[in-house]
Amino acid sequence: MQHLRIKSLQEYQETYQKSIEQPEQFWDEVANNFVWRKPWDKTLEWDFAKPEVKWFKGGKLNITENCLDRHLEERADKTAIIFEPNNPNEAAQHITYKELHSRVCQFSNVLKANNVSKGDRVCIYMPMVPELAIATLACARIGAVHSVVFAGFSAKALASRINDSACKVLLTADGGFRGDKITPLKSIADEALQECPSIEKTIILNRTNLEVTLTENQVWWHEELEKVNDVFEAVEMDAEDMLFILYTSGSTGKPKGMVHTCGGYMVYTAYSFLNVFQYQENDVYWCTADIGWITGHSYIVYGPLLNGATTVLFEGVPSYPDFGRFWQVCEKHKVNQFYTAPTAIRALAKHPTSLVEKYDLSNLKTLGTVGEPINEEAWHWYDEHVGKMNCPIVDTWWQTETGGIMMSSLAGVTKDKPTFATLPLPGIQPILMGTEGIEIMEQVAKGRLAIKFPWPSIARTIYGDHERYKQVYFSTFKNMYFPGDGALRDEDGDYRITGRVDDVIIVSGHNLGTAPIENAINEHEQVVESAIVGFPHDIKGNALYAYVILYNDVLPSEFLKIEINQLISDKIGPIAKCDKIQFVSGLPKTRSGKIMRRILRKIAINELDNLGDVSTLLNPEVVEEIIKCRI
Ligand code: WT7
Image 1 (cartoon, rainbow, N blue to C red):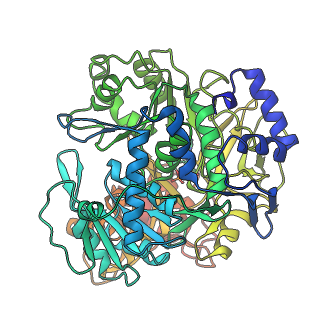
Image 2: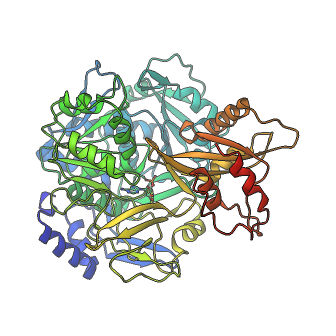
Image 3: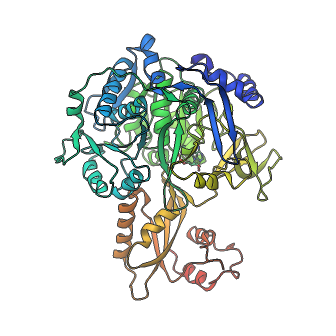
């Protein structure tokens, strides 16, 4: 794969040009570097109006043969995964490609023995341990569709995701270590399972030795492993067969199960990993995300393994045992590429730089960020203290829906620029759209971002709801994909993502829809209605501000605020808790009854002089009141 690595600015420009002039030929050539059981008949078939996208039609493959089997000849003893446990005193594990292959095959047999077959959905609710990656790959090997649910989600959130795609089997653990705490995963899962009729079997990994009791249809992971061998021939998949479902928040209450397919996802994640991070054969690469998010899917598991890379899998948190942990791990494993979130950088930058300087970071070559716009200050801190002004920073813009990185500099090859994602990757055709829905042709401009041509890893649908997929992503602009972000373009043609233009708020890098949080609050028996907006926060990027209407006879209290946040924790997870809760007698609404979040947003940030014309509101008088009592 190394020959696909772009090595100079000029090569990038030529490659990019080719990728948009002859996209099919371009992706054919990239795709030819993988192992296919049968070549494809047609490279691309698409129609954004339907919308329908098919890549490598008729091609047959199994992605795990590309992640594992193909490396056995030359990289059998190379480390595939370095596992760094939560507890720094627990030994790290180095899992070779040979061992990973064997463990994935063995777990594929466990799945098979538990009645999982091609097309079945398997929910994975696990801590960041090697078995999580192994389980994911085993699903892919057997042709089952994995749906990984982040282990910080609540029982309710887990249940709704299991039910949405009718998962047959649940993989979980007794508990998960996180800093000095243990998350009781098995008991959360048990609570979820009360309302999940589709689950026939639960397989439980013993990670923390928590006391748990297994009920009917629950089995221990290690006992299942003992019953099977490690020979498992990968199941042949169509390029367009489902590889996985991953849920992301939307602007209505229900999370969207984004569907990714085998062929295109494989080609794009591998290609983008190699080029953005400029990974070289013996490098050690570390992405600090959780496999429960798309970043972990694409750039801890699939992208690196497809390239035969060494990828670090970290169980812990940046603050344990102290705020130097990231740098201690970088030193310990001689990390060359380090990829994290702006929210983590901001949190670490609050602590003395001696916590960074203590460690030898001389192996670092590339730094990366993902998940939200990075502010100038955090960028420079990262550059100076971690990169020692000597490492390019790739600011990677993409989404769960895009499967892989869409815009980013290529480390050391194209120029980086503080707070700019910079340029599109080969094959990606971004444009800016004006308010009228017309493409802005001026070079220097600000607008809404749209993508006008398909790329191999675009999500194909929302599981079970193609109409919603069409409505959310393809109805804003005709024949274009609309990601929901705004951007500006400068005189160099570089893009800077300015943030969401819809009702999604990014808190600590987590994508949260306002609707599900409002729905959770509204379930409180003393609440009539609520509205959520974001406001800037030092570390989290954004925090949540809730405006809540109580029933007439209810007295506002601090206790109620705690109850409301507890409810949010239960329904969604602690990441969605509100920093500020204001009780109000009404919410500003348009005459058609739509909550004017724009006004609430301005009040939350105390920008009171340009609220705009409030006289057209249904209830202009509430605005005064809300301002008077703002927190
Ligand atoms: C949203 C997608 C992609 C993996 C993690 C998040 C925002 C993402 C950047 C960036 C500015 C960014 C966008 C996007 N976002 N990366 N480099 N600069 N904003 O995946 O949960 O699907 O969230 O995150 O608003 O739409 P996600």
